[in-house]
Image 1 (cartoon, chains in turn purple, cyan):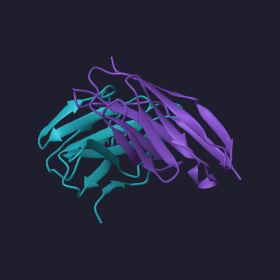
Image 2 (cartoon, each protein chain N blue to C red):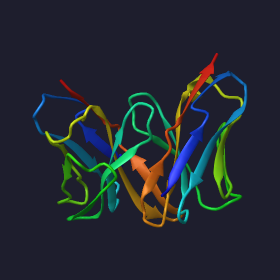
Image 3 (cartoon, rainbow over the protein chains, first blue to last red):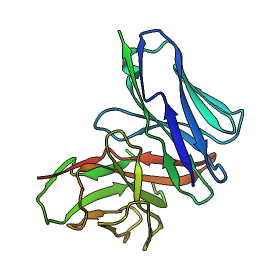
Image 4 (cartoon, rainbow over the protein chains, first blue to last red):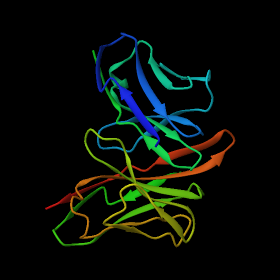
Length: 109
Length: 114
């Protein structure tokens, strides 16, 4: 059975304090690993898709990396507007998407 | 503007009532999905549809029903058989792009049982 776990559950950072969020997965044939940002009361906003180990993608202060068992979302010099819940999901050969519970990030000014 | 719309944003249901949540997309995506989100839990799949007039149960389909009569529309009915329907409901769609499949979400509907 496909599974996705995320750690930490919650993270508080000072503005400018870089850190990483972890997404660990077990899946029967990875067809993509996805990162989303979700603000309270809103739908998830797509950030990145990664397909193979060693792949990296960047967008502003965010960088996502992928290994065979986990993915990291690195946040460099975060700002208060980066505060949100970050969701990780995987897609398997069955074309289903499995989501992790998310990491709640708070960036304090 | 291309995107996914959900309505209403907030919905209140009395015990024993059926309610229908609307989801429309103009992205020309083939696949559409319904998820339920509860505090502290990941998104859980209710139903999905890969093509018109076909849909499959997800992990928590009991007490829900769907239809897919048009490519653009995938309404979800929450029936009185769903014992704990208070949750945030998210509709999504996906298609295969140049770099694979990506799923995009609507803004969500918050359903509260009175």
